[in-house]
Every structure is written in structure tokens, then in C-alpha cells.
Amino acid sequence: MKRRNGFPGRLARALAPSFLPVMVLLAAVAVAGEGDAPPKDFRSWAHSKSTVVADKANPLHGFHNQYANEAALATLRKGGEYKDGAIFVDSVNAVEEKNGIYVPGPKVKTLVMIRDRKAETTGGWVFQAFDPAGKPMKIDPVKNCFECHLGGAKESGFVFHKYAE
Amino acid sequence: MKRRNGFPGRLARALAPSFLPVMVLLAAVAVAGEGDAPPKDFRSWAHSKSTVVADKANPLHGFHNQYANEAALATLRKGGEYKDGAIFVDSVNAVEEKNGIYVPGPKVKTLVMIRDRKAETTGGWVFQAFDPAGKPMKIDPVKNCFECHLGGAKESGFVFHKYAE
Image (cartoon, rainbow over all chains, first blue to last red; front, side, top):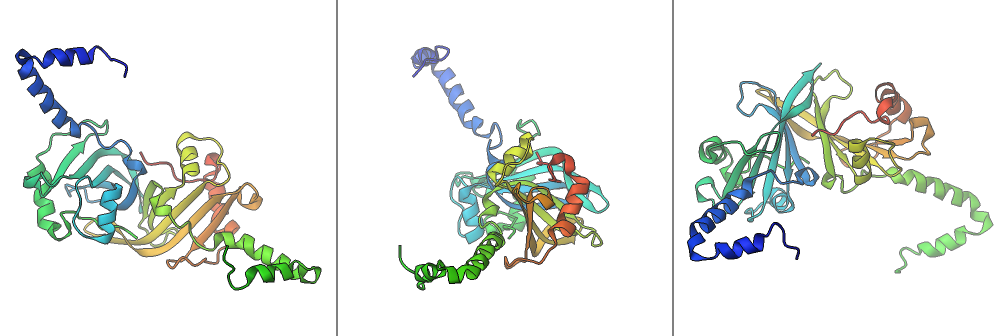
């Protein structure tokens, strides 16, 4: 394997006890890094449903296009418990309307739900939000996401939408 | 290969000159048969765009979810001339609305555009329509489909919709 920027050398030095605080910091960054960007290829996943929330007073106002990876799609269609690794993406665009025709406008944000049963405070799902450039948005996953999913979608594993046939 | 219903035998007999009219008829049926059903797997294709035509007076009234096979998607995103075999599917559901939230209701029909440059009277596209059971609907491809695509989408290869980012 080609050495890049001398990383293996730096790693070796970091393994020395005097570099332990640096190591701990690096590990913390690696874990947080899971949510650095939306799944790169979600637009090639199966489209599970679209919903247009036209009412501007609704906090979910937007043109929602929802996508499921293979693990999420199987459970969405057949039922049962979602397995770790199932992912839903809700790609939200602005709502544009003319003569009673609603189309998606510019991208507003990307919402992501990743099944991880270790996420106990949020029903076994990791909730994430990203701006149109793909940068993480600051959210409170419990208050901004899970409380509503808990209230309205407990019977379907906290997943609101149904697969649109 | 297992023989089914003695078909190879009947085919052999049909090859005799006295069966020529039957052969011509069979060939015609085979060509028409290309549109016997919508593409089986289109819901696993890339979702290119959704549009809600809420106005009931609009002939395109419905919740439209549009899908593109690989050949169609590449040209939709990058431009250029569509290659034979490119297919778009417009899956149309009823429009259900409550409190300014539009969701797809029951399936209404499936519209299909297949690129085939031999289809000269309809801009090199074969237009098809299927009912919710997947049975062909009787349409006039020129009057019901192409005349509108010709009028409004000539510059984009007769394809109206753009890929929604």
C-alpha cells in the first residue's frame, strides 16, 4: 500500500504513551465522522414515497422525496423489526406551485434515519440533518425528531411513511 | 429445454408455406407484445422526479412519480440524444390532500416512454399506458401523447421533466 503523507509513521509515533491524549481525540473524531455527510448514493436507492407539505405553517413544509436502502426497503414492505444498517433518506426541496401543479424547487435539506439499536434514547435510530451543501445541521435528535416519531409511528418501528405502490 | 404445450411442433408446422398467413399474424402479435405490461422492475430504477397535478380539470391530474432506467438517466442528467432502449416510467396515483399535505392515493395508471428511433411518427419514442392491474390501456400515441410532448419538450428530446436534484 502506498504511504500517504507519512501517516503510518505519525501513527507509530502516536502509539507512544506520551501521545495517548491525541489518540483519544482521534478516536472521538472518527465516531462523530459517521454523520459527516448524507449517504453519497441515496438517489440510486429505491424511492419509497413522496409527500408534499404545502402548508408553510407546518414545520415539515417542503417537497419530500424519500428513499430506502435495501435493508430498510425489505422491512418497510414486509414488516418486522428494522435491522442495524437500515437507512431512510428524506430529501427535502422547496415547494413550487403554479396552476395547481406542485414541483420540487431548490434543495432545502437532507434528513437521514440510520437504524442502530445502540441509539437507545432515540428508539434505536440515529437522526441526522444536512444542509444543501451536505454539511451537518445542528439538531436535537430527541426534541427535533424522535419525540414526534415516538408519538405518531411507534407501531411501525418509528417510521412514518408507508411504501407507495 | 422442456417442451411446453407442443409449441415447437406447432411452430415447425407453421413454417410450411401453407401456414404463411399465420406466421405473419404471429409476427405482428410479437411486436405488439412489447407493450404487454409495464417494465417489471421500474420501482427499483432511479427516481428522477415527482410532480403533483392537484387541479382536477387538468388532463394530467394525478400524483406523478417518475423513474428512469440507466440509459435514460444518463442522458436526462448529462444531455445529448437519448439512445434506443432508454425508458421513462411515470407512475400515476390519485392525489389525496389533508391540511395542505399531498400524498399518493391508490394507483391510477402507469405511463411508459421507450426510446426507439424507428417510431418516426412519435418523435422516436414508443408511448404506452397501463391500468393499475398492468393491462394495456387503449391510447392514440400521437394525439394523446406525442402532440403535447412535441409542443412543449422538443428542445429536450420530447422529455418534459428535469432531474430533480
